[in-house]
Length: 315
Image (cartoon, rainbow, N blue to C red; front, side, top):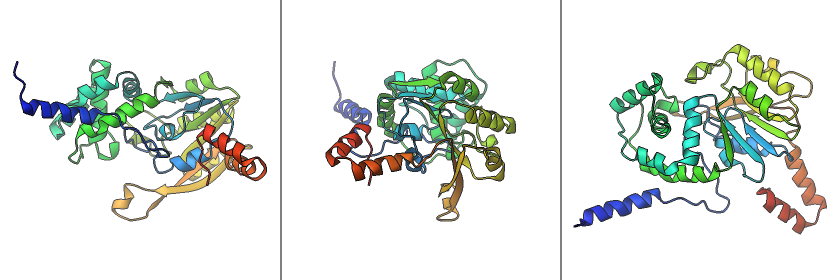
């Protein structure tokens, strides 16, 4: 059998595209996907406010997983959850079948016609194998405006550029439990005194931006009741509005104001900030205070070893 030199070049190029990417020491891990309301811009601020001690980490509204991928895996039990069944299926396929998923994405078309066809297939809930459904959903995320899953607005790109990220995410997700549950049921299932829940729900009065996830005023109230009556600890990110401030104005609840750059508004107003709230039922400064105390009063070598073990860099 004759093998053309051109075919050899193609095969070599394809292998390079699939080669796993290993991060440099201290380099942040990114998500393999963007998502509406993703926490890429706030992930440092959020992880800095994690409690010092917990053994269960539950991400209730997983979305793009920017906080999960950013935190150190350590030795805690981790759960990713999202009520969107297509999103939960995508995460399972990334974790369990990254090669097959990349194979399915190899020859995707970056076109409006293909986008509309795939979107129709997903909306009509056509029976599809899990991997093909995951590939379709990932393509819709990559090619829709602001990852909103609605309108085609893709710039020219190669899907192959995402394959190393998918394989890296697969390694990170190996020990992560992936759920597709209503938040109230999930919280009841995993709530323990040693549990820590990070929640990034659909923001108040922006619920219509999220496809396949109905979220109402009653759901915001139901979430508040679930969180404020739990045994464990929670950290919650929200848009800053009077309704949410009123909902969480309770004893034992800390409301902190912060802001981030508004990615969409940057196109029209450079430096535009978006006001956000970080809400918790514990002192969010305890991690910083804990390691400052270690630095001041403990043996420096012991402090260094503790920081290495926890994969924390304190400046």
